[in-house]
Length: 63
Image 1 (spheres, rainbow, N blue to C red):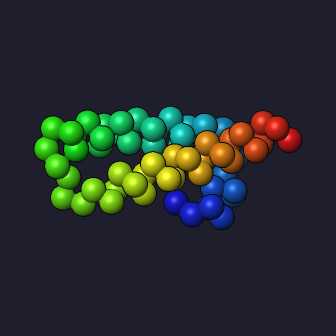
Image 2: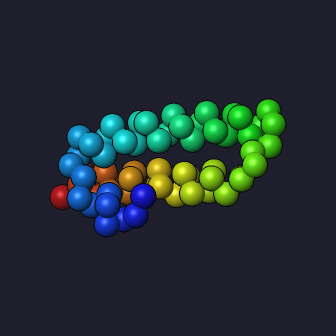
């Protein structure tokens, strides 16, 4: 998910997306611990997306 797409979402949508992606990241990380993923770069991309959303949520709370 690109930064421009994140900025277009409403705050409620961001909160929902954040929870969903955070859970997905945790599940994927656990699956990778048990047996290596075919493409471990998925973890990096998902982690960065979660961070982008968290940053946008924080920005909106400060404003």
